[in-house]
Image 1 (cartoon, chains in turn cyan, orange):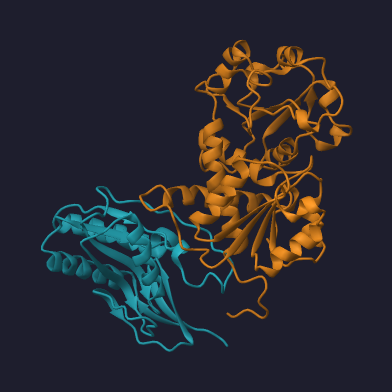
Image 2 (image 1 turned 180 degrees about the horizontal axis):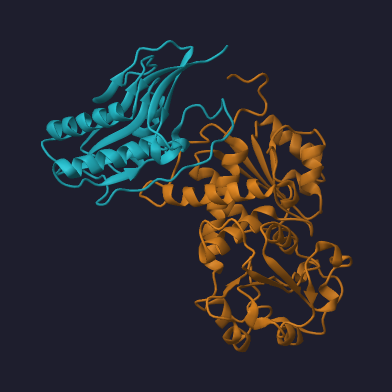
Length: 176
Length: 317
């Protein structure tokens, strides 16, 4: 097990992402954040607070993607999580999807479908805390906290205070 | 969970899981697009040997909103009227590739028979079997109660529920008593002596012949339909006398405590067990029950069919 990001580094990465989001979108006028449960939701909330400190508040929602997954036939049904529309909706907005780890890209594909059912944003961007590679779909992140090259035998664990009581990212080697 | 045959098959956690899933589905299907892709390519067969409006339509729209294919089968106009047995009918459906069979049958235990006989490998959902059980009705009633008394409630012990009327013939009563007691609610059964089944003491719910004595204490009053089609002898002298003793009329409605709700699984015999004014009053949640039925049945279909193929051998992962 090895430490990748500590609490200070997570905060600094998210601050940088906040600035990058503002820079790319020329402010907050049509910006909306959508966090993907479980942990993407808390990251989205943090980003929205940081962006509020830098400029002005930005609406923040939650997007559950369970019903749009492509692996229903492979595993037991999962419990659904909450979907919360951001204030003002997503129609015609610049939506930034937020997740903790970008891996195969399948979650994001499902998220794009789920988003399409809620409305038609003007653009969709992607912010992740960790990009660990091994994409299985043509998807990339616009904002990345840290690129971590991994092997498929490793798993990336993200811990966030709101959910796990501490801020930490580490790599674990999975026993075969 | 492979089948849903009876409330007794469910643990408290599984029941609450279904209710939670239904609540989340409500958020997902309230937008412009009501359809989710989750069960694309799955086939749900509605196998109805008994008349139904609500339950069949409800299962049909639940399956369609999850993008499953739906085939409706009603005994009338099918080979059942030529004497085809349940076994042969079921095997025909199996050959057509049914992933789930939703069955309603006038014989108690028909769903269990189908599930346990090995005739088919589909998931079986009991949509009412004789006077035995109707589990999805109980789940949608619990969901409706939860929406009124606390959407995330995991313990119903603060609630007093009256289930009133034709208990003897009611599968809805059996499933509801089982589920509500499992969730902790205090259930009282109220009916004339002729419509109380033998051995009711074993159900664990107190019963009474008097609708009026505790009326002010109930949070939920669930009226049952008088099932005239199952009555081949007279259980009460006439409709007017039944209404006077056990019908929810205006004067009884006025005595209910503030915030109490009136439920009915439908179809209603207006003027018999429930007066038109009570059925249409603001306390009545009958129409809501129907809307909630679709959500709860979506949750059940998702739990049963959302996982690996039942017919495939040796799954991955």
